[in-house]
Length: 82
Image (tube, rainbow, N blue to C red):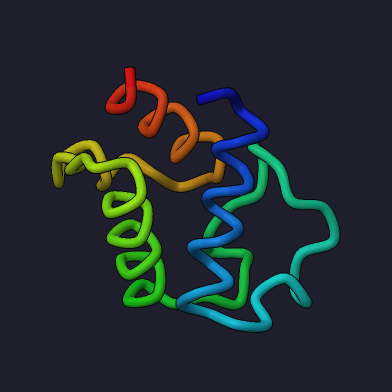
């Protein structure tokens, strides 16, 4: 899975759990912080569940605790999907 495919997956997850989130984001990319989007922590965890279902994987809690930006999530998905 390449970075563009992962970005699309993250966007799909956000669209599923937080419709309208993209109104708050001018440019979606690796440097965007989740705290700067119009999503709360519950929605982020629901997005993670969406991604885990699509990738048939499970992220470790300690790895998820380190995710602050979209780029962190990309790195985590690449690590688990490898």
